[in-house]
Amino acid sequence: MRSLRTATLVLVLLFCGTTAQAQIVNRLGVDPVTWQTYAGCRMQQFSEDNLSVADSLFREGTRLGSWRLQCLALSLEFPVRFAQGDYARMDSAISAIKDLASERKEARSFYYATMHEYCEFLVRLGRASDAMLEARAMERTASRESRPLGRMYAYRIIALIQSYRSNSWLAIRNFEKAVKFAADASQEQDLPNMYILIAQECIKMRDFRAAQHWCSLASTYSEFFPSVRLKLQMTDAYRAYAQGDADAFRSIYSALQDNPLYAVQADSDTRARLDICYYITLRRFDEALRASDALSTPIGRYDVKHGIYAARGEWEDAYGQLGKLMTEKDSVYIKVQNEDLAILDAEMNNAQLREEAQRLKAQNQMTIMIGFLVMFAIAFLAILLSQWQLRQNLDEMRRKNSQNLSARRAFQKAMEAKESENAYKIKIMQNRTTNVLTNYEDILNL
Image (cartoon, rainbow, N blue to C red; front, top):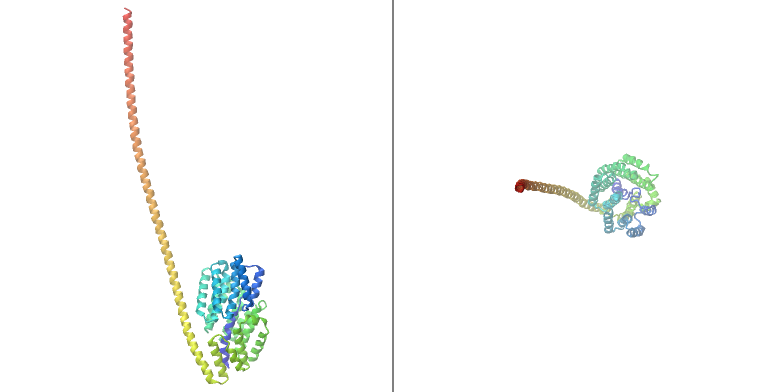
C-alpha cells in the first residue's frame, strides 16, 4: 500500500502548482467595474461562462481601441480552452496576448503573470520544453530590465518543470529563488502559494517536518486569501495520504467536497485524482480503477492501475501495467533528453544570433565611424582647398592692385611732369608777351 500511496501522491501533487493563482491584481489599470467583473470570472477560471464575458470584453476593447480590454478578454479565454482540451485555441489566445502586450512596458507585469499561467498548462500537457523556453526567455528579459517580478515567475515555471520530472530537490531550489524575487518585487500575495508548492515537494521526499514548516508560513496568509485555505486543506490531505493516515485523509477529503471553491478552482482531472486516493483508502478498487481511466496522462493511468492491481493481488495485471509504465517512462525519458537538447540547441542558436547581432552592430558602428571620418576628411580637404584658393585669389588681387597702384602713380607723375612743362611754357609765353609789349611801348615813345 505504501508504494501505491506514493505513486498516487506523485500524480496529485502537481495540481496545486498548476492551479495556484496569485492574488488577483489590477495589473492593467482598467476601471473598477470592469476589473470586478474580470476578477469574479478569474475566481472560476475554468467556467465556460467566462467565454461569453471574454467575447463581450474583446468586442468592447475592439470598439474602443483598448488593447487592455482585449488582453483581459484573452486571459479569460485561454484557461477555459485548456479545460476544454482545445489547445490550438489556447495557443492562439496566448499568441494574441503576446502581440498586444509583449512589447508594451506598461503591460510587463500582466504579461509575466499570464505567461506564467500558460506555462503551467504547458507543463501539465507534457510540453515542458516549450514551457522551459518561455521561462528562460522571461528570465532573460526580466533580468535585463531589472524586473524581479518576471524573474519570480520564470523560476516558478522552472521549478514546476523540475517537479514534473520528479526532481524535487531542484524544484525546491528554484521555488526558493522564486520566493526571493517575490520579496524583492513586493509580491507578498504570491508567497503563500509558493510556500505550499515547496511543502508539496517536501511531502514527495517524505520530509514531513519541513512540509509542516512551509505550510505554517503559508497559513499566516489564509485569513486574507480563501484560496490559500483551500490549498492548505489539499496539501494536508496529501500529507495524510502519504503518511498512511486514511482516517485523516477521508476527513479532509469530505471537507473539500463541502468547500465551494474546490469545485470551481480544481479541474475535473484533479478531482479525479483525489477521488482515486479516497477510493483506495476505502479499498474500493473497482471504483478507483474506473476513476483512473479519466486521468489525462498514460503514465498516470498505468502507475495508479499497477498499484491497484498489486494491492488486490492480481499480479499478472499488475505486471502488465508495470510493463506499460516502464515503456512509457522510457519514452518520456528519451523525450526529456530530446527536450533538453532542443532547449540547449535553441539557446545556443539564440546566443549565436545575439553574438551575430552584436557583431553586425559593431560592424555598422565601425562603418558609420569610418564614413564619418571619410566625410570629415573630405570636408577638411575641401576647406583647405578653399582656403588655398582664397589665398591664391587674394594674392592675385594684391598683385593686380599693386600693378594698378604703380600704373596710377606713374601716370600721376607723368601728369605732374606735363603740368610743370605746361606751366614753364606758359611762363615763357608770358615772358615773350611782356617783352613784345615792352618793345612796342619803346617804339611808341620814340
